[in-house]
Length: 164
Image 1 (tube, rainbow, N blue to C red):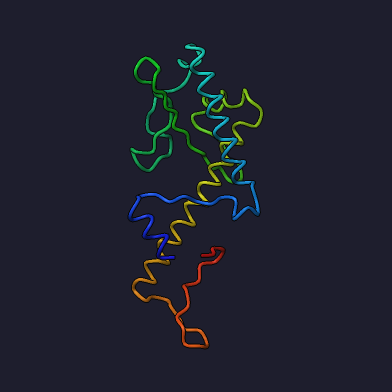
Image 2: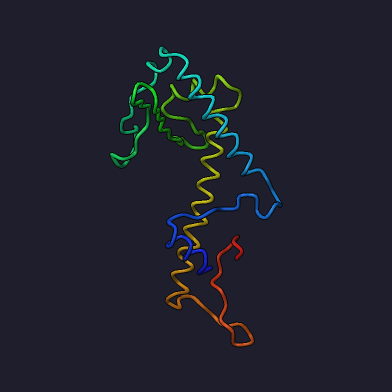
């Protein structure tokens, strides 16, 4: 586990295996759909200035607890750089997409909004796992929550659902 933390410290990033060693490809397919949906979105927006004007400017998202919680569309350099920031809004079991205008453009392609919601779930799951590894590695470094097995060897901290 410490090699994971060393890689994060040394490089500032981790490469995450979302196919679980080749046993499942659902998360990888979800991420692939996100890239296709994003590409379609920007092709649609770039091809029609009227559609671009319908998108709200990048601003603080409704209900955001921080001024850094933005949603909207921005374009720079005469369209050479375009940026859309989206959020998922939860209302009970219902989830919707903001800005809704971007969701409308995504919906022009079948299941595109759902693809973006699904990838949000996938990225959140990966983020939770990375966070759990960081906490476990910190606990190992400071000998917290470590037991010994029957042979007297130190055990790895228990992190439900993760393998090293």
